[in-house]
Image (tube, one colour):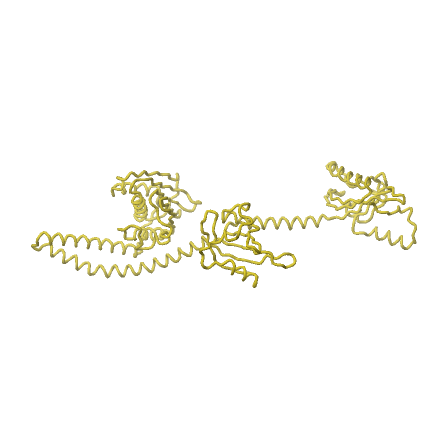
Amino acid sequence: MGVRFPSPAKINMKTDVKMELDNLVENAAVIVLYLDTKGNILLCNKKTESVLELNRTEIINKNWLNVLFNDANSVMKREMFKAVLEDSINYKRAKDFRCHILNKNGVEKLISWNVSPILDKNNRIEASALFGQDITEIEERETSVKNIDDSLKNIFSSIKEYALYVINLDSNITYFGMGSEAMLGWNKRDIIFKHASILHNAGDPAFNLALILEHVRLFGKYEIEAELITKNQEVVPALLTVNQFLDSAGKLIGYIFIAKDMTERKKLEFQIFQAEKLAALGQLSAGMAHEINNPLFVISGRLEMLKDEELNQKVKDNLMLIDSQVDRIRKLVDRILKFARKSTLVLEAINVNEVIEMVLPLINYNKMSIAKIEIEKTFEKNMPEIKGDLHQLQEVFLNILINAYQSMPNGGKVKIITSNFKNLYAQIQIIDTGIGIASKHLKDIFMPFFSTKSDGTGLGLSICHNIIKNHNGSIELESQINQGSTFTIRLPFI
């Protein structure tokens, strides 16, 4: 129902009360407009003048629509507000409404309006009252806060190594976002309300979900290194922080998980550990090689002396066998020394495409081409030059290509791809379709004396690793059983 508020002309009250009322209206912190039945403004206050930047003579006796919507672009807002006022009058009830208006200087203001019909004692409309609060600054602050909030969400979502998800007290996932889809591969529609155990490695002895949640209940927070499981059942090492999720009354309603992907950090830690281990093994190997060489020279000398003696054929055959094994030991010692010794690089400007082209005929020379193996080359055109030792880099590519051939005894394909990696590195990928290497062996593949071949010395890839490291580059291997292997080498441009 409308407000029973008689017109000023019919107000019969003591003079001091009327003056107090007039003063209250005049100094009110909201816009006050009093309209007759034709929509003309009979009364306004200081706030109206301040917001509209009009003086009272420009407002009183003017139609309220012309005062509030004085520009040609406000037709839609004008008609909407007019409809609100008519609805208020027709149904004799107050209405709330928000709209933008332009003041005299063209500054847009957002006003929250209350429209109330004024009824006489016979319940008939005799006027209307408009009360407006300028909420422009409030709206701007809310918009600013919302924009900041949206920006923070976008920033957090764009950081791919972080994932955020929430579970309820039954350990079912209730929120899955903020990088979770990117890191773990699940679509939120497919994982919401599933048990949190779907994301955690049950075989990880360090992770016990029940104990972690109990700790969080008691102390509010828990942090642990754990293994998360992707939709494709891949393991992601993560630093997991678990916090309480409280409602507005402070009651525990769930748990917030923030996971930081530790894959790159773990890889870097392993590379540092491997480098330290290789350095220690290199020193040990050098000492051992020198110690082996001394008795080896004595054995070789005595064998040469025995070859000049008059011996029967059986003894000569045995001596030849001993000599071949001594030669084998000598070659092994030479490789050990080569691994242990930090060779002086002879650096020159090199095009990696040309180095690979030089190496391919050497594989044929090693009679590797008799197998039915196809070589597919995809070389980056106009590849910038690197600074490297030609002979050492040839040895790296030759070693890897020979390994690729040996992994395909029944034939297959070797892809050699060179590319410009981020304008920083020459990237070389050697991909074969061979028997592959088990995942459990990948962490040891560049370690000296480790080999998956029955007759391998385990030094070839260690030497390759050292050469690439000495060139300030990197070498990585990805492999799966019966799926082949991919070596990726990156060498910095000059």
